[in-house]
Image (cartoon, rainbow, N blue to C red; front, side, top):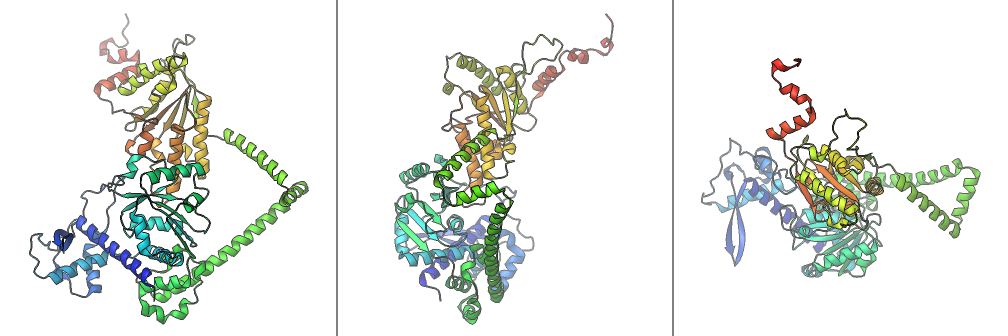
Length: 622
């Protein structure tokens, strides 16, 4: 039998999940809710919007009836980035063959009403095995560390609590923050996790996805994703000054950063997945009697070789317990085999490198393996310098366009040079460009510092409104080079560090051509920062943070005019549009009739007279 703490946590998880189902049913119109005061507390009273006479009293049969007729009301509809529904209508259509119960109808049979609400909650409740296993691992770590639930809640109630959790289970580092975010099992929530390598903006501390949430700072344990010691110190200071909780989760006992480990209020350490945890998880799904009947089969499971994902794959509600046990046994064996194959592959790869090397290379490799510290330091220094040199010469995919001479008398018959002065329909963008032309002349004359100029622009508008044309015209008007790139070009890098290198090298290339214009097309493709526990959040957060650093970081971009173009300005992270970055936002509308006439006049030039001349005058001789 599982202990009291584990049982309580699992019951709380089921309670908050069923409560979320009832709230969803109210939003979709399947349930109605009224408020009442009971013993001085305001409580919600639920009632079905359907006729409860359809129910038979057999919970299994009634759940199946609910799935057959009203499943759509228990599914969360898709939402946009601001938490608004993207479907119209936002709620499902009521089935025509079912009678809708009036909201003013008097509840005569309270037992039937309560049972109908229970059927709704049970039908929509889908227990997450991974969440349950994560809670069981947390409970085991609390028991092992001598921390009670009362102690944990008391610390969480305080401002700026700091927690560290180290559990030896593959997948736990991501699973625990995701559990805190996706459910309300943690008190004083709901919560939204923010990675420690995030570039913070004030609005993230107050409002997220159209809901007020309590932010917690998640410190990554992986050293490759962890910010520098100085950067982490700054993030901790900011979080603690704002009263924000701090959570560091690790899958190793030495993975928590020292700065968190030395200052944490609660430190939990657990050993990971074992047979007792697997038995408790099976008990939560199938009941204690089923676990006792198959105790000998459970003993065959190599639990230490399993991951949280393995538990979620093998154990599913409604599946026979023996099938789940056999799957766990097989997955554990596969994991052990994969580890052995990986070790053999590493050994083979090392031997293959020695065989294919020349004798001198093998001697050099053997010498390095012998532990010559001076040689290793020299080799590392040389390799580092070569790496830096290669980094600077890496292709960025950017195209450098030189301005066309405006006063070129060598080709008098050539069409006029495209300039901002000759553009039609650009409105505020044209005014911005002409003002920049005056400021650039003052800057080159030493009369105006770069910091006092408006040199960063976000240009938006529907496709075909001439954003790229504006950049080429600006290049000719200012008579400076134009460096053209796009976010899709940056994302052609195979790995994250390749993408970040392309971004940094593009800005470095622009600085080498300064003064110049850096035109970034499809800037909305950089995305928005996401919660640390969401899929691929570390990838997109790193890309956004890198762009923020390049736009307004330690490396100055004096002499580089940055113009970003997008069709979807609402998809750009708010921090990119803040002061010092792409703060000037100008929208180019679709051209009206006068604007279209001006565009035609510009492109047709002298041919316009022939087109507009009367039919009798075309081709006439003087």
